[in-house]
Image (cartoon, rainbow over all chains, first blue to last red; front, side, top):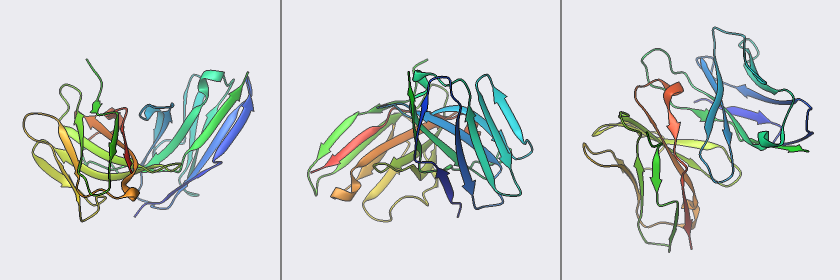
Length: 115
Length: 114
């Protein structure tokens, strides 16, 4: 089955700095890679995703890159703000089209943004 | 449109008791996923259900765990004879289709076994 490794486990940055979180996956059939933000006491919330036919995707201060050959993908947050502080999870799935897929999650990264 | 509702939010059970976790999907959502999150770990897939059918239960322990999603009412995750190792946060997600991008997670039920 799929295995997703996520690094670092904790990340501390100053407000305004950039933050990068990296994940690797094992199953070459995986083709969908979402990122979730989980705030304390809440469920994961999808913040951005990328499919394997795309190398990079950007949404305001958040971007995700994918390297299919190396089987790794990364989350980039620019101009970090204290409200970005949360746990971030990467995930992978082999879902495609109308086929359902289940998510395999990384271990999570605790991001702390200091004012 | 209310989000995915899970209850209770917190559940304390003694070893050997039964735990029932409820998940009411968003309106119009007929697909439900259950995930378990152990302390300081990522979420692990347990089971995927569509209305009245279990589609994939490959992540569910073979014993003591069961899930259902009846025609009427919420999806239920049932854990019989709970043990300390069952202590975790249990999240459900619902979706209107098989498209994962459209799935929303509930706030979870935190089960503590004492």
